[in-house]
Image (cartoon, rainbow, N blue to C red; front, side, top):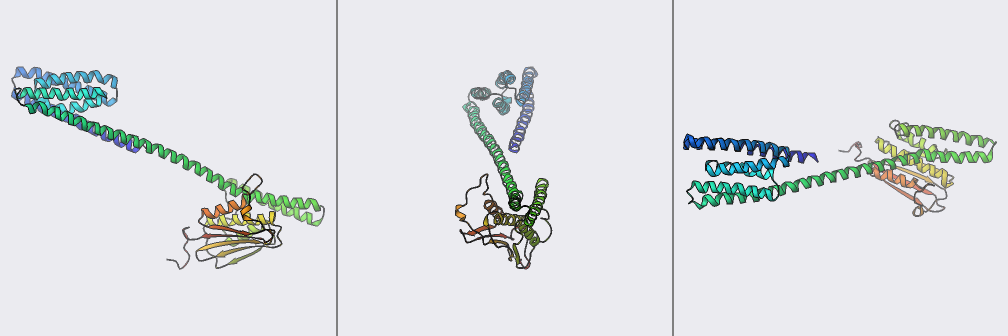
Length: 395
């Protein structure tokens, strides 16, 4: 999470600039005050010491900014020594103690930081106490109390900053984990989608073709056998077209255009030629993702009739409601117990699961009504609301 880190860095940089500018302004003001109140002989050595303090301060600040702790320490020790001598000799420079304190806390860590801060406060207290003629106790205790207060405040700021950095790092790690989880979920969802596409097109088509070829083999060279071979050839050609479509765009041919009823009827008759197809209600425009789901469910359901039901009659009904579209697939075959359907495996079992997933992902529902010897009804319903389509007459 780079934003909080960079923002904290900008704030720290601004504070450093304010502290350094404050030191420069206070040093100039203190020097002017001292020069105006003392003789030239006294001014020479004090101003020279003040100039040395300024040079040491600048060098220490640059090294501290670069984060070179090993090289910063000796310069900071020299600065504290020069500063202590200056403030004791010329208490007029006592106001610069604040900048010295903050620079010392930046340059040192741990016990050394507390010792440096204490030395700064002690030197300032001695200088001011000396200026009062060693009589004003407030001049002695004031800097010490201010140093203690600044130390507590600085420690609190450091703890809050460390906590903020830890929280930012935790948020970053959480975001990275969330991104990885979403990526894995996306991959899993895509695999699931592709598996449904393959099952509803290639797998079902190949299974139907295999049944036709096996029937032709049993009755060859009768006319029915040749008809079965022709049907199997047509199914295989459509499988090839579906496979190419999946490879290039993972969509069914003609899916995005043309009447939905024609697409559903075509999908049904791929597997059962004599299926009865009908439409109820007034046709409405259906979004592409809903069209796709309805076509695939039709393919899978009718292929199951061909492969498993041994039905004499089958029907597909596409229905339009004011706020939904429905699909009912019926056969009078042998039926089955929906509660006893085995889990998906290498031998099959993906059909009903894939159909139900398609419906649920689009906010719809799928129900299966069947019993051994009583045929099967697969009923699907998808809502048109929330898909960008508004039926006529709705606000």
